[in-house]
Amino acid sequence: MKLWNHYHIAHTVGEALRWLAEYDGRARIVAGGTDLLLDIQQGNHPPVEALIDITQIPELVSVEADGDLMILGAGVTHTAIVEHSAIRARATCLAESCGVVGGPQVRNVATIGGNVAHALPAADGTLSLVALDAEAEIASLDGRTWHHIRDLFLGPGQSLIDPSKQLLTRFRFNLAGRHEATAFKRIMRPQGVALPILGCAVWVRLDDSGERFAAARLALGPVGPTPARAAEVEAALVGQAANTETITNAAKMAQDQLHPRTSKYRATAEYRVEMIGTLLRRALTLALSRARTGEVVPEGIGA
Image (cartoon, rainbow, N blue to C red; front, side):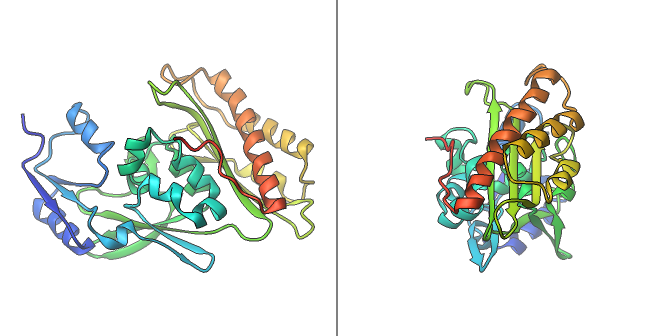
């Protein structure tokens, strides 16, 4: 049985969108294909008439730092993100999260846009984009619009993006500045299963003295149907001493307020609540050290 009948290589966003319109819902965008092709092969996605390859569209594979603003093409691979010096130094959580996705072969082709478009609350790169407070650009034949990253997620596997007529094109977010830093930690099943039990991405800003938290963003998943921000914990950190006691209290508060369910594929709710505290303590401690010293060496990146 043929899984698709036609394969087109687009060279511009407009060309890709026109092909989508021509097939009127019977075509899908493909880049790395690490999710889509498996879904089609395993019967989790209906066969399509055509695939539209977007890997040759220059703007989708561009990584550009405009001052403190990073503009990241949706077609950039996880490997390219891990290897980019500005991302490693100033959006470290994104390099760390992309660096633990699959193995090298997967990271060489899987894209950050695909990670987001699949709309799963456990997606590693997505959690970091949420912590970075990123925005995403969606293109259609009617034009382009920017959306906050969290607005793209309507439920598990359900995205604001209409794959039959829209294309996720770019992300933008601010790079860490003075007294700011990020970190990512996760725990997962054995590599043969490659299923995250829980991931945690954090961004922190210290005050000018470096002694108190001035702001924080904490993203965790999966603890619900969409990537979660621990908003009350973030607010509680502001103005508090940047020390181990504050971090311990924040981790306990997150455990009390976030309620992951038991999953036969991941772990029990009780275990995952325990891991919320563990990962948040580790990530906040690491981000705090980076924000104070300015010294950043990404951790946990796969070989």
